[in-house]
Figure 1 (cartoon, rainbow, N blue to C red):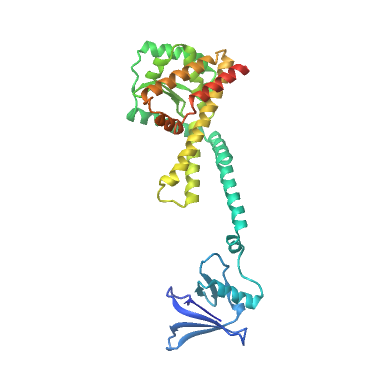
Figure 2 (figure 1 turned 135 degrees about the vertical axis):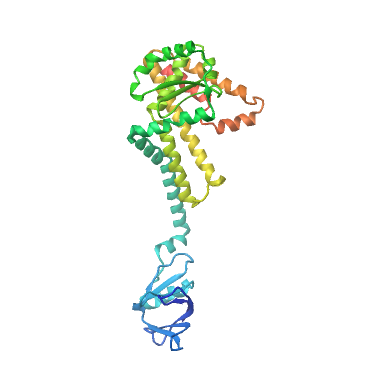
Length: 353
């Protein structure tokens, strides 16, 4: 039996064509013939025994390595011949578990199912739980660093509020009694213009209300409903958790796809979809916090419903309401759950309480 391959002497990186010969009439004798010459001008030849050789396990069509001597190496892609060599001397096959796995359809299907299950568990439970734990263990200065993003927003998006100082004072006064019980969150009320009707919280404790949003508010109870929602984001550290989860998802996608240099559409789309899913779950958690806080403060959940309806109408007025396809796409890509779902949740809460 002859096995064609390449020989490396361990002293240089140069490869030499070689042949490993096994003689059936002398089974202990294995000869390595390399097409290179020694210093004396003779063709290199080695006489080996099976015990002298260390043979790598088989893995797919990966070339096999047979090492011996002082870092000498024989490499061949004739895996079947190497298996036969091992079988001839040991009486057993040298195929590894991985080689058996990749050649068994049943084992492939089982391994695929287990892999999918593990990824699903990591995405649904592992990553959110890890982000939740880490976010609540981080020192306070990390939130302060993230909170500095308001300065960036002021430089890029926002303009100073156009509200009269008396109106700003009135809004702050209406919210002050409810902020007092959440002093540990260090909430700070900010007013800005330059963005459509919106309100959001930053990790540093800033709660920003836009001028257009305050134009929608008809009473203090609607304002307090949204205030409680934003306090829910601060209480549950949603922004910090979202940053952590996005980082974990990105790393997981890169690890699975091997796309280290760039994240194209195929690798970036799953990250986007998961991020939107996490964002919607955070919004529902903040809604639940707001409804609980309103219940404790004696404020009817109807005010939560009414301000959600006004916000939804405000967003719809900016979009092309006649284009149902456009609305379906924006709903699908929205970071917030559908308004109907949030209203239904509030109505069910009202009924239960």
